[in-house]
Length: 551
Image 1 (spheres, helix red, strand yellow):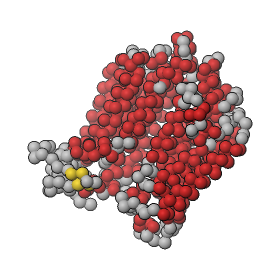
Image 2 (cartoon, one colour; image 1 turned 135 degrees about the vertical axis):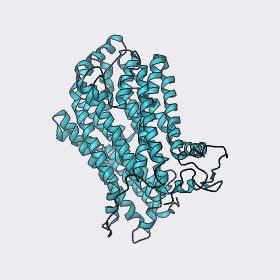
Image 3 (cartoon, rainbow, N blue to C red; image 1 turned 90 degrees about the vertical axis):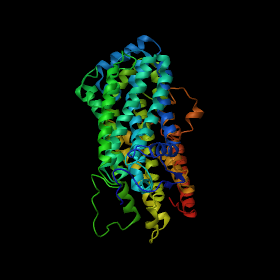
Image 4 (cartoon, rainbow, N blue to C red; image 1 turned 45 degrees about the vertical axis):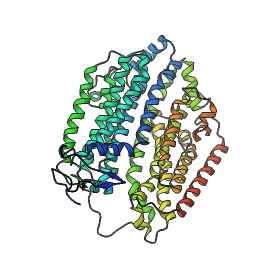
């Protein structure tokens, strides 16, 4: 791999990729030369991904006042929720403590931590995509052959993340301004602050690893650890003062206390963390060659041990399956642990009861809540199956599939290995999630596992659609993320917004029986299974007929 000289990245005045010319004025900074051109390129490449993430997270936050107002319409009901948090440690671990009983305060309690987590995911994906992913694909070396400064790609990636988080902050601030401008601004800035903390953290990790997939996994693991620290701290105290909470950037967002006497000084923690991590990332970026890393990948054995397409797919995706399984086990245990507490929280609130029963079926409130949690696990598992199916897209567009298919491996054998991991892995993580849910609740293991298995046809249908999109054209394959995200958003906030059944039924999950507690009906399960098989078959047929992409 060609090293990049410290002062410049090449000798020619222009270089290009994808038809874009890179040139700078003679008076520009050598270290940051070409930054604005790279930023424009990054925003152009992410013209779908960034707006989609921002819109989904923003809508999730700004729609919350309406749904909460319909549930807790009086000051007395909102005050009762705040009192419940003083005694319910499991719900504090899930959502955090309530600092104010105004409608805005409940919004910050109910959705603040999750908005911060989603902003962190969005940010780490943006940064890794435009740093380590570019180097891994070899595109960064071509760009660096022109007059592009050593730190320009990293700067452009962080600026792209800043643009995304600034847009998110504006949407949250504007959407919640009616609940109080100061609180809305605090929540918007805090959410963006969490995003930028993990953007700069991803920038550091991208310097340490040689693989974009590993960089995303490690940064995502740190994000999960931050949420766990916040949850552990909040479960032990009622006012967010735990040391564990203060060790987490997600906990900083909580302790900003939006709509409850804002602590503006907490924003300095975000500024300090972003600045410190940014300095470290810039220092590391200046000490290595393009494509290299400080933690090089361990070379494999001299003689290959992977004899089948399936074994290759498993080798590529086993880390993802393990990570999702552990995450579902932890999430299931957390959901199970709050089942009894959530039932107590509902109490005599008929509106809350109606929403839970609409999501979980017309059964007892405990069974309805369990069914709701099983449904949420299923909708999140749809994200896994899309990610796993689209590994085909990543292998093809990076041209790693072509050498495999040049041997005695047909396209269907190559694809079937990844699809087995995708659809079989979805079954595994749902069973693991059901096990965690039953263990957290302390009973009903067979019923909960059966309810989790019933979610599979809907999950497979989303995966089948991803197979079809990739089979038709690699360019449209990423649209499967939009479908999975829309299904998740529809299932999460649709019932609270009182969307009509005709809209909720657009999601395949809306047709499944609500288990445990509801009546088992086989017709929708079988129909969705047939639809999933048909989508997979059509996608494989299309993949077999078309040409492979050239990158």
